[in-house]
Image (tube, rainbow, N blue to C red; front, top):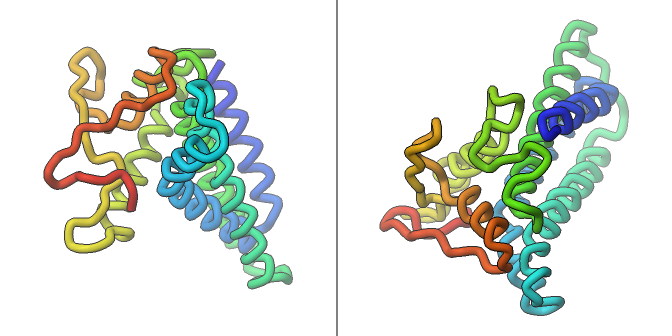
Length: 219
């Protein structure tokens, strides 16, 4: 079931973004990409703030992560969308071939990033450990690729490279866990920690082990 839902998200987003033309699709792609990275960076501090200052019960401690993550993503997308509309308010013509390649290429990339981000957000929800075919260790797109782990890997790579801050830097989700019974023997802590929380039904997320060169989960 989860595979069909992900494919539907990919198709719907691709179709909608392609209708914006080459320039519009390009702007939306950049907006979605930056929104996803910013949401991943700030959702845990926001969830902690909401849990401590709004509602802090055990059930809501599980809900704030997904609410903060998706809420920030949607908010940033609307913000960047408004900015890009003001930058380029009029339709800009390009060569017909470039127009078709550009709009469908950017649309497909936007659809895939959106699908990967929402699949990643499922890890943070207050749902059972496994549901409607979703399994943290599984390649959740027809058993072929794992868009959530691709997105997590990209987020970590960006935090280590282009968005690195300072001499040591702040690396997103640095610790790793060995899982010998699965195809991927080394995993980042993000899916494991949230899977453990969903399995236990508790609100708290176990802190990741800290290594000497990977000491923080923010950029």
